[in-house]
Length: 239
Image 1 (tube, rainbow, N blue to C red):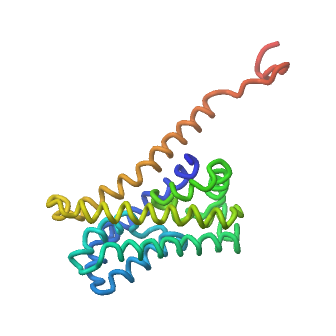
Image 2 (image 1 turned 60 degrees about the vertical axis):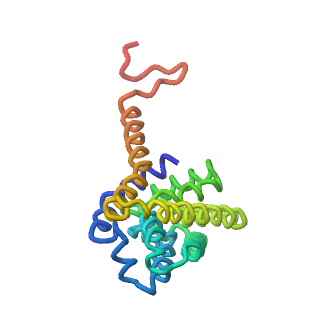
Image 3 (image 1 turned 180 degrees about the horizontal axis):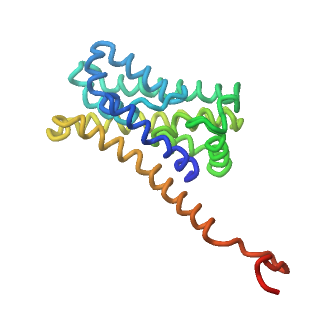
């Protein structure tokens, strides 16, 4: 899992630059949507879940959406159901894109869809299997490419759909309900933009930690010489 998070961490800076232009805090988007709020939420979640465009609000969208739902006349349960449906369908599209087109999306010199990330994802699936589909739900950027990687790795669809639904239900429920209840606290309701940034920052922490560990491991591999096999003498060692 560390390999996947570490490779995804390379995308954090450009992604935050994009989101900082107005997508980091989804409040204006949701308020501007008015009666179309549910449709906008569904579209964003669908795209961000598996249609290869990770630079959209995810966790913050659900949190703020759950907080604003009552004030906008939207039933919280209906909001959560819409999130569930959009997240599940988005993952399905990602899975079948990966299954149908495979490695055609990936290039060695690509910033996001590069072969290094694909190899890491395939190793991730081989090691962790289905639970990775649930864990990835809570990590920005990673959740966008996880369904695609599952399809490319030919992960059995019956298993995929089960873990996919489980992850969508857990993700959609926890963040939306958290926004609904925490939104009643004055300091949170009055500073939504600040808390949206905090939420994104917290969700990125696992990737940053994984990236730092990955760099440390690579440095140790470079510094520490490879021990010679039994019976062999290093070329630069006097005989």
